[in-house]
Length: 58
Image (cartoon, rainbow, N blue to C red; front, top):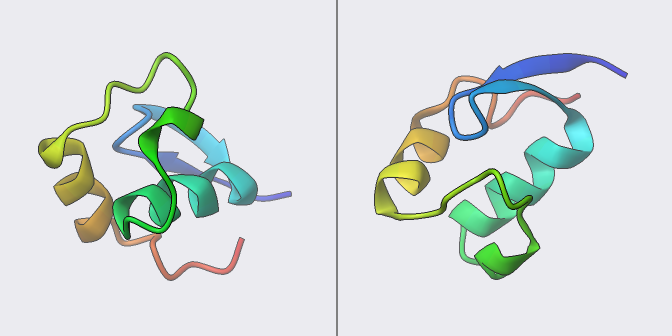
């Protein structure tokens, strides 16, 4: 599976993790599903919404 650099996680992630983070940013699911190393706030949400890989088909 392809990986991309995620500015929210500050590391490379796979498509499944990207979908989960995007769903949190879209407020479809709660941030409690995110890994403990990701501290979610509006700044993180803005990073995700601006990410060039948001629409990337991993």
